[in-house]
Picture 1: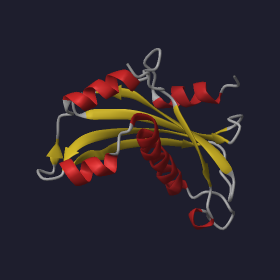
Picture 2: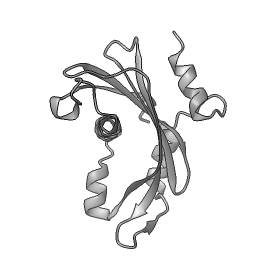
Picture 3: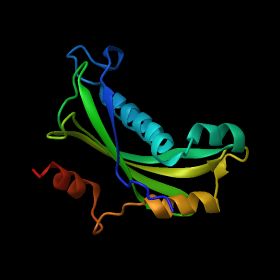
Length: 161
């Protein structure tokens, strides 16, 4: 039986075309960096190719809700560490968390929660997760120890370790 990591991590470099005139990462691009990191991590760690699923099976996930907190700027050419994890799953939806840190994870830059709905491209409607996906989610889900709202979670992550 394969043991899956629950908190995934990767590094990304902040690029010029994603920054504002002050050399800060544009707010909307934080989401792009975190979603891109999550997609890469799913493939690298779980063998889950979300793009192949869309092409071959006509299924994917659409964003239903995103909450994001911008705490400290990310700067041009800075290498950041992005951690992601699945906090919750159901038959039709997922909630994942992404956090962007300084490279050494000493300073938290941003936190995001995104609720995704499983979607059938042909019908343009929500779609039940199949048994294989539900089994994977059961293996990798990393629920918070107790239910909290987004703001409370951000405060907790900001606390020195």
